[in-house]
Length: 61
Image (cartoon, rainbow, N blue to C red; front, top):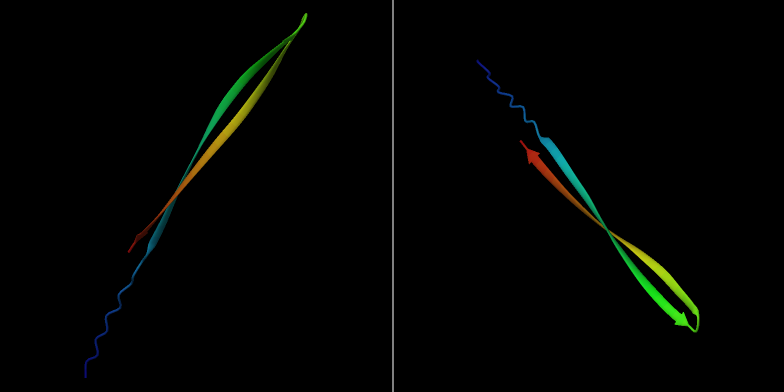
């Protein structure tokens, strides 16, 4: 009696890639007010940050 067995090994590789990008936008506005002999200038700055994240997962067997 001859018994033959074959064992097969399986390897799975998981690769995850994450990409993050950020963009900052600066907006500055000036307001000038004149009252008789007084001139007042006010400045306002607004910062807006947008963040984008992309994740990719790859399975290799």
